[in-house]
Length: 128
Image (tube, rainbow, N blue to C red; front, side):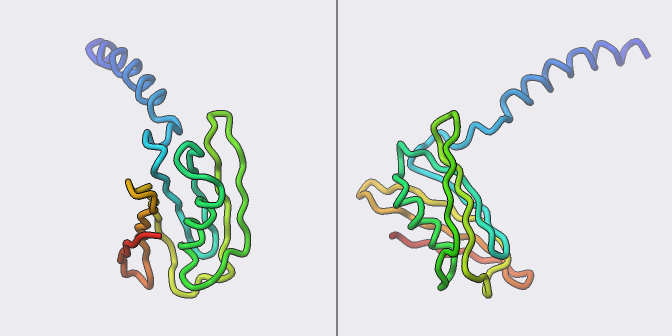
């Protein structure tokens, strides 16, 4: 039993370091952001150093798959990034997924959407 205590004593500081590092630091690249979506709700976060508000909104609208955004809200954070909360008018084709937006060297935005429909998954990638 006493042998387990030193191992546990070593494990606790390691867990504390992992917990400190696993905070919501987000991506290191301000030219990239991601969204999660399901049914109609969309949420994510972007860095204004890489995208302006109009670009973030336009990118977010790509998730709506043929319908328009019904709601789009941004909230500022203490770290300077912006939280996005949005909803599409309808999600008739896509159940849930992620979307990643990356600033290209030519200024365009690369869109990659990974989604699931009726238990099948797929992805699409294009520039806007």
